[in-house]
Length: 396
Image (cartoon, rainbow, N blue to C red; front, side, top):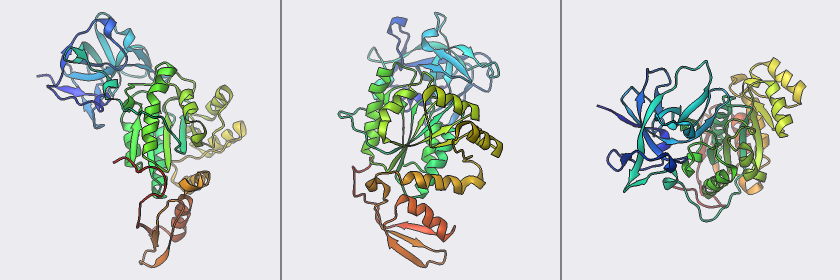
């Protein structure tokens, strides 16, 4: 008996096993973001796995049914494909484990055969196809004024999500209300889930506004992403930690999101594969980040070469010996925040290891980091009042 697996692109929908029909549609009715079902075919490889609606990886076998969404991917290190390339034979591939459905036209030779499927039909209700946009977040008024720490890369797999996790952890430790978001890329749930697990209070990505990937025309992307930014604004966070997938020059609309965020960007961290890639992004895109992270900072030699080539500072954020240096960097960036956002706006009790009262006052986020360091690893910060004195109440 076949098992139906829903890819994580379906996490915004209300699907159950009996509230839709699967109907083949003529190609003239296909579009990006349509929910479709395919039956798994071929000989399984390590890529025969689907990320389900709660982020778990599920092994699939020939004969299983997979629900995903039509879309495009243009990954420099893995593969290129589109739903447009699905032929009359109905053969398609899972372009990502989230259930991004298309057909590869170019794929890295180091990878095994991709998850292959045969198109069975579109998910339909009352004869009408069901699309991601049916479940997208909406917003009547566009407003966004959240200070943003932006993570960009020189390519995919350059360390953006890893760096974002470290940022979320440190800022949560400082007492900030952090929202984590991935604003460009190809749909996967694991990246923003990792932000939630390491300190972000809320998480969002472009899937929430009906995009299976951000390889879409720039005007379509901007129309979709603005309601998402409005919802983030409604959460009234102290800071948005935003990842832009791939690199600014790839067709994922990285340049567009940087324009949309505009002057709200208070810090930019460039995650790079090597020091020379930093030079490339600087020259091609004119980007001058506040910090470089990722594989380009793996060793002291790499950091020194980075400095010689670009004059930029680099920190290997996953090196325990550089933790305090990274914390100091973030402390400096927090001082850039507007005054009403920089303060934690609460009364805190900082207690030493033996329960001695150290003080009672409002701490700024930067001060919480430094105070905790000063009092040692056994300090406990007890929040007495979390009511904010600015902005909107965060979404429940």
